[in-house]
Length: 170
Image 1 (cartoon, rainbow, N blue to C red):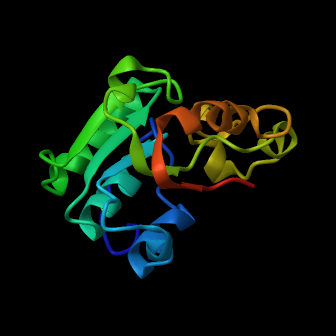
Image 2: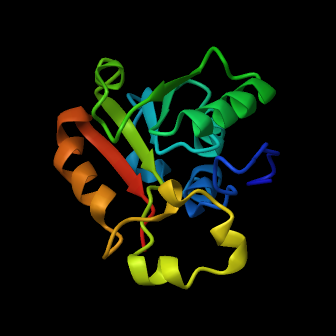
Image 3: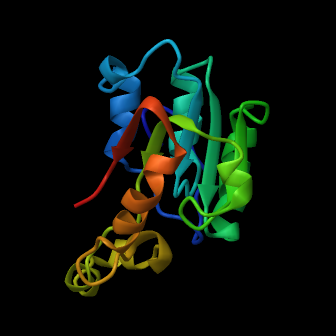
């Protein structure tokens, strides 16, 4: 469960727990959005929970949810279907913002991203319950910022004027 919505999870994705979900539901990012916010990207979607919540909170938006893991996207498909959002959420395989199919859906007005950001030392010290989750979804390299550096390099070319990126790191 996340923000009152039930989600299916298995060994191919992390348990939904992103603070971004709370920001979506309680309106914490509304100040930065405009009436022209129509294209939302949930990058590193995993189980699809942020995409589902964004589509639920903002009924006028089109959501693209992407992940590098085909297995995680299969879990996201279960959750998108469970919430009846097949017409509003498109699932795509992409390594960061690199896939041409993802690029064709932009530019985006809002990018949500809960990337792998756990640094190497913290990965070695993770509690047992986190060790059951996919390393791909958690490990962010020596300092935890490998994916984030790539994202910051790629993102400007995929963002509409006045767009917003909400990123969970650290």
